[in-house]
Image 1 (cartoon, rainbow, N blue to C red):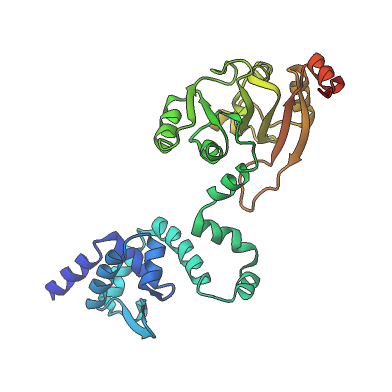
Image 2: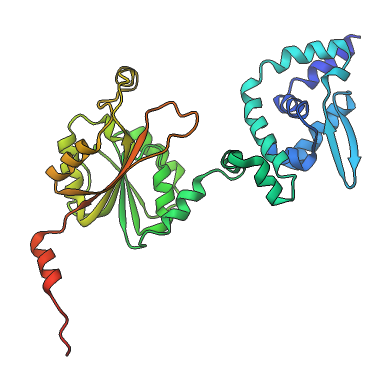
Length: 326
């Protein structure tokens, strides 16, 4: 009897086998589907399935050329059910990720695309993200940018915007005041040759005057005390006609963001951003309040595009000049 107990304990000593059992207790799957769900080699999945089947944890049925595996807790002997109840309760976090990929895999079984999208509806974005991530969207949109641009991400953090922009432009400058963040970026983007990392703050940018064509400032402005200085610096480093793409929070009253997260500003109104822009030689070209995603915990965001005005003399020269035939 003790040998049997030790065998079952050994069987549940591997986290991957527990994850397999949890997924198969929700729905039966093929080996190929489990490979997708767990993102591991087929040989690894097959080895664990063989071990679990040999000890009576799984049932297997053949459908055509495929083998489907299932786990029914109710079919287990009482000692195994009790053991499973204890062990499985400790793996909730891993299981939530696996379950999300399981739902995506189940959805892909349906070959009728019209029926598939009718049934999935608004959940398609979530399923698509499970299957493919969402980085491709930014990278695709980035291809609309002129390829000769020099772009800066001010407060680049872990570098998501840098990675999306780099394939589309001449060069990208990532600025952050945190050396740790910059090191993460360097490691993450070591394969990109046109990304330059510079340590500094937005109030004192490590960028030459009129060096860049465009700047991104994404969810960074609310961390800044001296907004006038920050806008003046951004205007300085932008070429004439350059753009600032700004995303941040609309005004809100959540003071806990200041106490717990170090925010210096409780959001921005359109008028406030417009005043800061005009004082630094920038003009607001667009302003949008962004849709708040379901389940979002933070305040509503806005997107604004600001332009650096072209010098009046240059503007008048361009508008009055003509090309004379030779």
